[in-house]
Length: 165
Image (cartoon, rainbow, N blue to C red; front, side, top):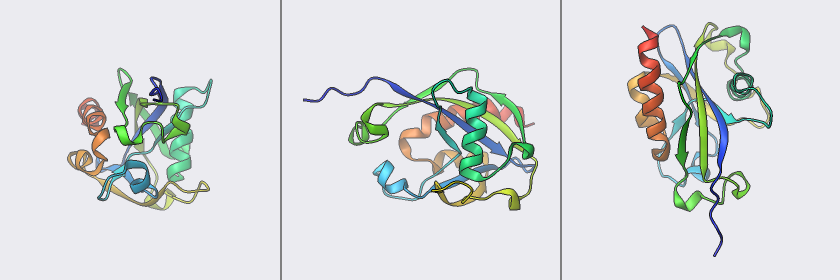
């Protein structure tokens, strides 16, 4: 029997909010393969932290790779008071991230978007991660995300919502 991984992949996430207090979400191109779930799932930009990489730099890199949004159109507002963890569902443990991690430990950032929709380019990175994007209301986020990440999204919304005024 193979021993399950115990480590968590270091990760950052960005809640990118426009002037209407809506949040950027993208539909992953590979969402069915990665989640094993049936349905249509969206997520905020997020991704792994490279060894030795500063968390803010990782967040800006991931945001640029996944959305094409450049740092000049982003004002970092805040970051979570603590990192959050989620475990992969059993059927995915050992299959993602070369089998090294049982889930992710994420630090989330709140960023205000000062650009226009034309500044969003899902093909800025090759290969792209999202096939579609939209602005979503805060109260929609939990229902859009794959079920095993919902507790993380609840926490992110609860901590950042009061900062949006």
